[in-house]
Image (cartoon, rainbow, N blue to C red; front, top):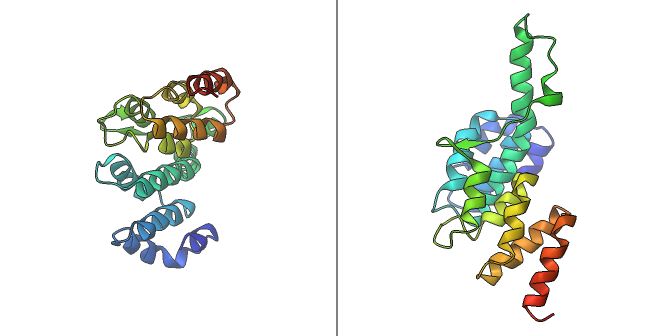
Length: 184
């Protein structure tokens, strides 16, 4: 399914939309990614709902985040195209300077997940590092560095993994402290 989306095969959009309601999370996640690769920005509300839903699996959360990242350039192009239609704004180069962050019920999505890193009771806690990895926002790095010292070793290990994925050189001293903490 994802391969069809990556290949730009728009003939299966109805199939992908139907798969968004499948029973198996792997089909749902693949549908999100396929539709995102096809630039289907109308899946945005579903992605924002599922990424934060307490009942969502890790797979659904992380692939929703990945789909949001894939959709960002499509959304920016949509904004730019709308501005070009306005003759007073058509000369502004938006893609060079425009940035935005996703919001869920008025709260910044990155902030929701960085706060979840420190709230062990949050249903988002365990998935937070992986979601932040898929959202690819370096602004989350300080919170991920702090998560290295979480009481939950799995959360700390996942945060370390994500910092490595970001190639965060500033995390080096934090990682050394963690190794020392574990007697390494």
